[in-house]
Amino acid sequence: MANPSDRSMAARQIRNSALGMTVKAEIGQLLMLRTVAEAAAMVAGFVMEEVTDLRVALDEIATCLMVHAVPCTEIRCEFTADTAGMRVRVEGLSTVPNPIDDAGIGWQVLVASTDGLEIDCAEFDPEAGGYPVTAAFARARLLVKPPRAAPNS
Image (tube, rainbow, N blue to C red):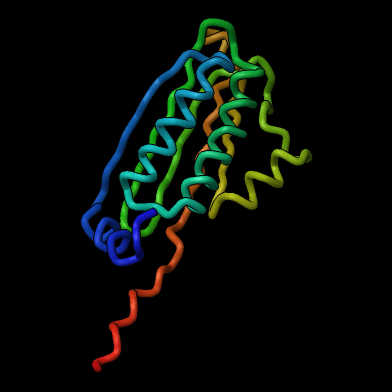
């Protein structure tokens, strides 16, 4: 694990980095999404608690979208990091109007692991054959105190 001064330096160096990826809307692709989310957060200088929160939130959203995905569609994820935190946007095409249940334990996990969560479920799109869904969330960086200077001896 990086020490706080390394983490602070990494956070200052990141002005605005972005990464996007598209995977098949199949449960077998969850590992790929988790791995990319974790790598993006670690490269951006997030601490393990923040990385875990990002990965858990993405996993919950992607699982809901994949379970209800229109066959042969894709899930699109975008990760944007800056000195304040990371924002994640996930898009998919669902067979049901509200694939992310806001009454279950998964919703509580999402709320607890993010610092802002928006779910947009659009009307049925007959051309696409499903309901376009966009989920966006943010995770702020934890405030890390700079290391104290060693006392002069």
